[in-house]
Length: 164
Image (cartoon, rainbow, N blue to C red):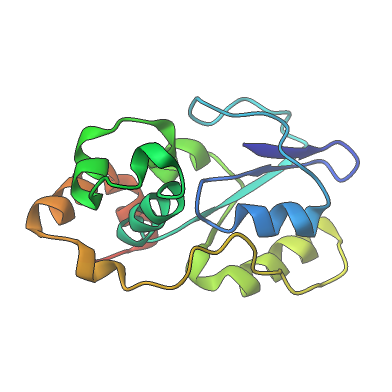
């Protein structure tokens, strides 16, 4: 999903479970449509940005969020992660490769201040929306799942310097 502002000349690329709904509230926009391809082409005059998150934390957050849907309610995290293929589980760098700025979910507020300054926006605190409750994701992984995420999210891990 993305927000494109022709007025301020920016593109916000929303990677699932990285604070996107809070960003929509901050930017005053809604999604411009799904982006189901790696980094799309945009005019070079536009500032592009998005956020990355520890992929082990993000994958567990994706699972917790989707458990509200009936078809996932009785599904274990392991089955969800290993057997289902959908774009919401894609690597963040699949979406963000080539962006002008890639913030970190772990530094959400300070990275938003950087974005606001770059765009000439009034500094405001980013609201915390669409939370699924706090959980210690590490308690839900075994070695197989740790390795699975490490393999499929290698670029995120390298870019963000993440460790399990």
